[in-house]
Image (cartoon, rainbow, N blue to C red):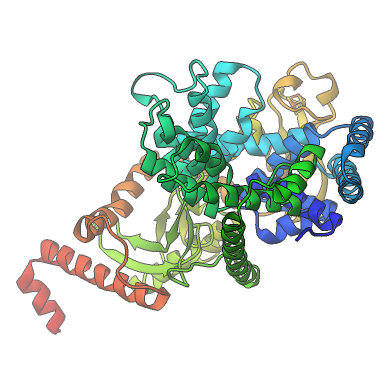
Length: 590
Ligand code: SF4
């Protein structure tokens, strides 16, 4: 059934945002709000989250900044397009014409609204520097966002390969597609050379389009993919059931009736027409698609059997959508926006900033540097370590009844408030700072190039100029002092420093604690080696014992118990090694 034109236009907008923003981990709620026109509020929220380093917000904002803002068409172009489309629409039957014109006007009005919101909220350079910083850390989605920012073919191909290697599905799909299309140099060279078939298989789970493209290639074989009709049919059907119908329609006419019933192909063609009418096919609102969505169901070549089949497919879609909507509702209500269908407590974990995540648990351990015994441990389902430093350090102090403690942790634990809490509890910390500087990634001076002079409460910039205190304000709960120099406008090295009017430096009110820790780290160059060989030893041993497997239990209480048993076994074996069995037994009996 055809929905009202405004609904179809809204569906089309939502699909336009969803195809890529979902891959960038945007929530369904955010997609709803964007499609409904709550644009300024959404962009402001994303900007605030991006400022505080939220990777999803950075990538979503990066995509919007490029596609919607940078590539967005001017009002004149939009109006010209609207006028030409309305003229073409005269060829449509009157009901279609009316419906199409309403949807088109909605679309154009939305594009103008989007453009205005972009210029109100988005600073392209700022967003780009955030994305570049994420890309420098190996984030696959951010690497992919950078592909379009260069016109140099070899550089584009390299960025696409980097993003594909980091596991970002869209990059894998696009790289496969360019290899299949025969673009010279796309696959790379030597042992790092990419294979289109592998890329499509890797991304097929997340992208029905990849599965569809795989099916089309398998029909007669193409670069890196052998011909396999059975596999082609299976993949095309799977992709259609997941919403990508094009592959069945493309390969169906080339198959014999025993390989794929022509009624099945017609049925999927009808489904495609319905998706178009609903604005859910991802083809945009155009006269051509409106015409095909009307003509296809009326075709006399479609048998009644095909229509019955199409009804079945459509109902299956409906059931699937209802199920997904229910899960979407649960996700919206979940405090962290996640739902795990296998283990209700498991959550997505950050994995080395490579744009991928494993659903599971985060096991924290504190290990002593001398004997490599696990002194304290904790199982959490928080996907990062930023809030774990102080709780784990304090738990360790309590376990060994020792106040004078020095803790080594990796960059993932770096958070000012956590380091401050430790210092206030008398615990010395050694945590390297993550390399997230957008300026550094953009080839500009890093904050470390500015020297703070405590006695004067000012900075000395790389040009030797004074950057003095200007004002103080609270951002994301942190009190920040802002400094800048009055010499920037006449500075000869400004191009290496800032693209703005002047370079601003922010200093947290407790930054002296971080400076102190940095000095301690500078005096302890072996800190990172000590941490690695201490904290990773028990994990390596436990994983060797467990094998390449998962926890055997589900939910936090059970997984915590399972982990405790592993830790107990590990510590017992360590104690046997260190003390010997007899002294250990004697100590236990005391
Ligand atoms: S641009 Fe300003 S802050 Fe940067 S080096 Fe020059 S004077 Fe110093």
